[in-house]
Image 1: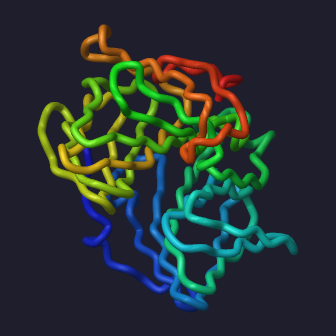
Image 2: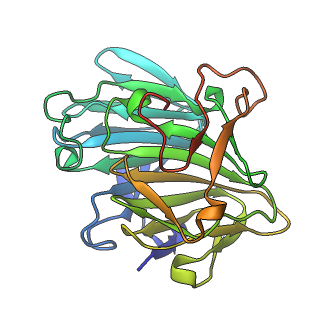
Length: 278
């Protein structure tokens, strides 16, 4: 059964100087899940350290503000469209002059779902998803941008996307086989339908679906709905309740800002893209 809650209901705990952590997806909240998810908020002038376990695939997705990520003598500027892969067994520092909020995701036993993880662990990678190619739905005005793929992050333990639903748009009913996944709503309002049951959602909501759980989502008629979606493992099969409305995503040749993207992705049917495409 889907787990749905808003981040505002989760108690914060001190995580560093001027930094707070909210544990969103935990073994207590979602028993048996392969995913852990935290939300961090850093006050102006604050900083914290993140220790990535040697067995974990981990990433940071910036939500608001700007920060600096420090690792092995290097500094990387993070803005609100950045997502970073953190190497296993390493420690990174995050500091912000004016304040920042970000998600920290982790797959604690990555080798269990990515057989190559132990011998070929991912290195540090930084992606600006606003420069990635936009794909559009063949059925409606929805758009998607990849955040995490094997090509971008070097691991099959996780896959991530940013999804944009214009006002009044909806997906078709479907489920995924071979992976659990979660959504984090960054903007707007809508309704999710796990197993056909409606639940209103808004910014800051987390929706977790187990493997094979049927679901779909619709945006409210008066505002755009935007959410990040992550799958573990990254490869799975999508099964549509009505195969006639199976979604194929078409390349637009543009990034989210309307400029030429940094790379090209071929058109594909959701859940069936090849590793070389993404």
